[in-house]
Amino acid sequence: MAERLTAEARKQALGDIAGWTEVQGELQGRDAIGKTFIFKDFNEAFGFMTRAALIAEKMDHHPEWRNVYKTVEVVLSTHDAGGVTELDIRLAKAMNAIAKLTPG
Ligand SMILES: C[C@H](O)[C@H](O)[C@H]1CNC2=NC(N)=NC(=O)C2=N1
Image (cartoon, rainbow, N blue to C red):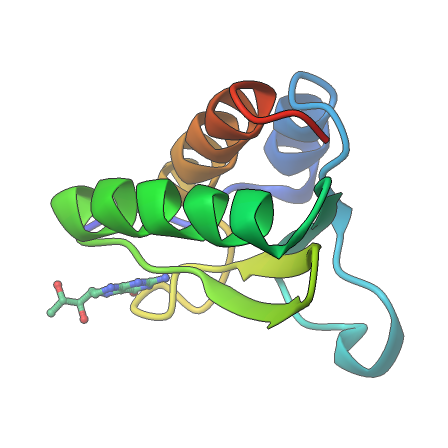
């Protein structure tokens, strides 16, 4: 099973993936990372979600996310480990790569 990253390792990993930050706000204190993607329109946003869903299913690692029109808010955490692991970092990188394929 994937191990939780230390605060130090998580900070270092976040430095490598554009736009991802420690989750803030009402979920503060929770060990998770998040990013809000904004696309051109709903079609691009949902296309992103469709591609990301296929990757997530293949990884057996699934995002928490919310879509409103062209915005997709994503939170990643490894539920089995109770925090952020390498799996979240891998999925975050994959999502960034997919998002680049669609005009934002
Ligand atoms: C049984 C199955 O492998 C697990 O429940 C997987 C499914 N998807 C998952 N997704 C996420 N984000 N965290 C998990 O711990 C997790 N566990």
